[in-house]
Length: 247
Ligand code: ADP
Image (cartoon, rainbow, N blue to C red; front, side, top):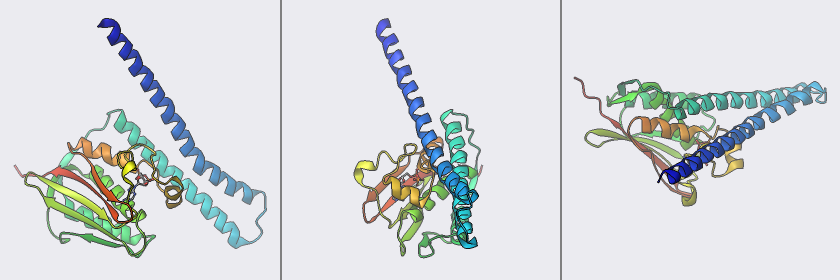
């Protein structure tokens, strides 16, 4: 039994080492993509190859966009590494979901790249639905899910957030009428850097870490994250939060 235990321990360590190698390789690759792109634009400008001002601006904007993406990626990487190291403390406090969801809607509408997507909610702006949650982290979960719902929808789409009373908990559902996810990818989209359509996801923008962050945070709130999706029809992500009951 001892020998067997030792053996499986070694296997586990080997597996862990393999994981770390793979993660480093993934991270390097993800970092390289925006760095290469920004470098290309900046060096082309430095070479003096672009004569007119309008095109120079275009190149600068592209370089800036890649640097912004790089910044987001590093931020998400730090979040993920803290969470995986287990060093996150949840600050549970009463949070009004209605207020938070409408605040996010306002923000999305202000800096909307796609203006033709309708954001809906199954409650009024001034309703109060209190849950016990880490405010900043649940905000991030909702932003990530709603951003994805918009990103992976075509013009004319509808994104609907619902909060459903389940008795002791409130269920939060983010539903879109977007491109959907093929069933064979469904259980992998929460993995770091996993993307259904690499080139499409890259073109749309995003770090590839959004859903793994969502999963970590939701699990830290003693819930699971669920997904249902039909290609060509849309997707639905849901999780639950404890109701806040005033003492
Ligand atoms: P990304 O930055 O690529 O959006 P995420 O971790 O947020 O990274 O999502 C992982 C992948 O899951 C996406 O690349 C996309 O393929 C798929 N995905 C996530 N949300 C949706 C959605 N609402 N509709 C369709 N596909 C989605």
